[in-house]
Image (cartoon, rainbow, N blue to C red; front, side, top):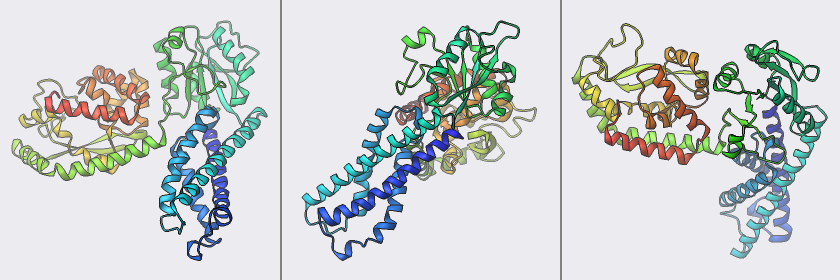
Length: 467
């Protein structure tokens, strides 16, 4: 919540500066650039119009990621990002606001546009730098902090505690204490940080103390320890950091956005840019709508084949778990005989006798998934994302691989990196193996990667390599 509040402060500051900038721009145009005719607008219009303009720029900067954890962003990178966003945003704004403006000539138009770009860029930089200085001062006076828990009590934990005590105040890290992995050992943090409990109590501690960061600083960090930590904090808005080993440093896994950052490996994927989310959703809507229209004749033929293949409904409906654990109804062409799961939920397998002859072909070509374009249009799913599963199987996966909960933070998809690299799963072991690819996708999401997955999926459909 604290991070969102800081982002809100930055958004409010940008709104105020952009509002004032538009009023100043009106005066600049009127008295220095050219004198508009009475039809071009009154001062009153230029007092309420900035409300729209201020909101416009706030949305532009928000979509550009300016308000996502702004304190830990690189100042230089954000300055360049805002300059680029302002240039593009100003071009769009001028087409909307000045097409019917009586500007005397093309040269004056260019000067007017350039003047506004320089003004807005300058004001956005002032807004960014001033508020950043104010927030840093607030953080250093302990008026606004991010509760941080250290996992471990050995030499690495002591080193983390020392670094945070020395350099963490400007970023708001507040060490509320540490938890131990093993009881009974000698703790180097005893008397320096508060002992909060054991690792098994991490979830209760994190919720009770409203933790924002968990830093794993043990001498031997293996996969089992990571799984245990993720099992306790998955689903909570907490960043999990790991003290890097030499292989992480040499392999380029350690990323720092600014010199103030700590060289940690963050193992909880950060959300992508809001631009990505917006464009991805727009693509989902456009493509799914076109697919439902253009593929309607094909789907009508497939519906007839399903009807003739065996008694039962054409469309198979089933409850799956979507984003944030929300259940929804998924739609597919029926590929199994009726009552195929009368003995309980069961995954399909090679040569499964429950699958109809036409259903076997539909699965190999993945044409049974076509009705899911309706799920995409509704917003239950996306074109690309981890495949949605039933709660029955999710419970079994999480019991063995708690990191699966990470996949529930995004919309499931018709296709995924796991489907391209692995395919359909016929057991819990295979579902966990496929999950590894989807976790890789989660950490590397981009429109380019989505496009590649869609192209590979089309290839797989043409090759009929489904199960």
